[in-house]
Amino acid sequence: MAKLRSLKLVHITSTAWFVVCIGYIFVLALRQAGVSWWIVLSLSGHGTLIAIILISLYLFAIFRGISSSQKVHLEHPLTRTSYYQVFYVITPLLGGLAGCLGMIGVHTITQFTMGIALGTLGMTFLVWVIVDPLVGVLEMLLPPASRRHRAERLAEDKAQREKRQEDRERLLKEVLAKAESERQHWQKVLKPQAEELAVLLTANKVDFKQLECEAVGIGLKAWQTGGLSCMRELRDMAIEIAKKRCGNDSVVDYISSLWDGIGSWRQPSII
Image 1 (cartoon, rainbow, N blue to C red):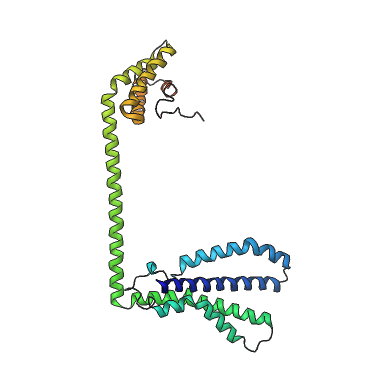
Image 2 (cartoon, rainbow, N blue to C red):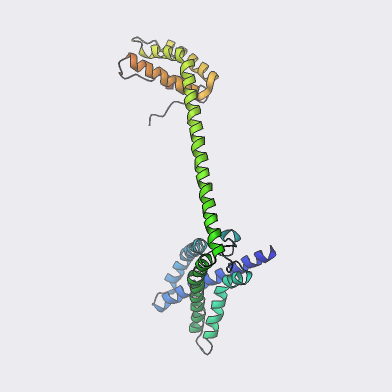
């Protein structure tokens, strides 16, 4: 565990060094192109933050790093070794050291530091982007045990995905079946109340005071019987019966407004 923490710390340090070198190359390139320091400094604020975030996301998505959850030991017998992991995480530092050795004899500070930064960038790109993925592919393809283990793992992952999909479909069918059973139950139980509400909705001369009292009483009883789902089913049944009696003419839905405030029933917004 301590070894893993140390390796992660070195990995973070080398990645930070890699980002610093990229930033240095970027700034020096702008200065050599004749860009003033004011523009460079204005870009170095948000630009540096965005660059760090993008580089971090890129490294996290592309490079496998040192997380044991990203590798399977039987499929990666070489890259899972401690020696390779140490080499992988210190690659930017090794690149900087190689650039430093390559600049021996150079007396200009700018050229010396640029050589270190370019050495870091070049070696990191070579190892992380080209060598490491290539080695990972080769060690999976060449040993028979790696190919067999990978095929078994992929088959197991596929079986688990299919099982989860089947479980979701079965659960959805159970929910739909339960809802349909509940709806049929409410249709049998609530038919008298729905008929009564339909009579109120289709009456030629409506006494709104009487309609309000009777509808509120029916809605309250429906809430006490089965809650919001019961009230919705009763309202839909009443409107459907009323439309049939009126020959599918428009029926004003007084029920939604009259039931507003009963239990958790709320009048739909007109907007």
